[in-house]
Length: 229
Image (cartoon, rainbow, N blue to C red; front, top):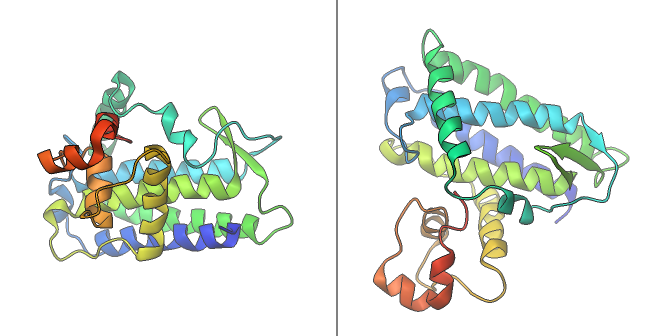
């Protein structure tokens, strides 16, 4: 996929989250999500941190070659870890420091579009496939944008657990997350044919358990789940 295409997909992913949260009141921002212990405002703060990291990363060029791509990047983050639990606790405390949950929405709606604009400046610039550094890794810009898109799509699905009228992620952005799961699943296995994209993402990330039929269809690959936490 072209760098410009990845930018469009990130823009769709971040705009989708804006559409979910923009009109929520403080009560709705305290509804539960699929992320254990996090309400909507907590999860949005986590996403805000990701958009802030994007701004830093896109302004942090690095010499190549890259050491990870948009798929292998995720193998650095095991689905269940003590670091994840500590981060979850830090996010809850940080989000609680806001006077009102809607304050997080205001920051998100400022920061996410800024990250998209920063990405646009690079992908339409002289070196759209150059390298950047983040979290101890070096990635090409299109791969970095794909990681942001995947995380945004998965968390979009987390956000809408108790928001039945909320829009779902856009198809272009969802396709990036699906491609990531396909890469993590590897060429040795394929997802069960009965799964749609949303079911695939929820089961690949451990949001929904595998059923008996899923395990039969996946065979040995069932033991690899969740593919991403």
